[in-house]
Image (tube, rainbow, N blue to C red; front, side, top):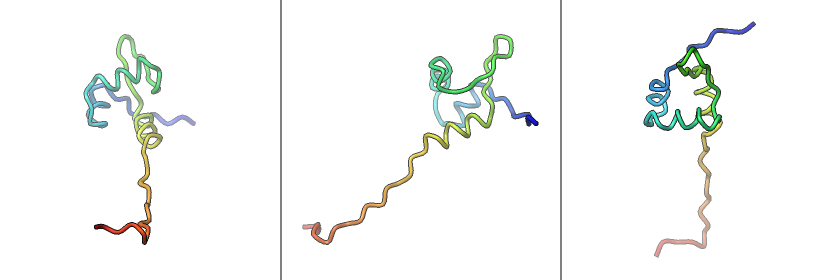
Length: 72
């Protein structure tokens, strides 16, 4: 069973990502994100934006300080 997901405008995606409209348009042009064509309009499913953010999230690295490196 396919659940209907909300389709977002490019402007809405840019707002969610905190970028300009140019960034999601570039993702679409380079086919780096899934999109839907509705007539001449382009829409991006909400779950695709969430998956994109999750896939490009970088976890912090725990760096243990060495006992030999002390501040001068």
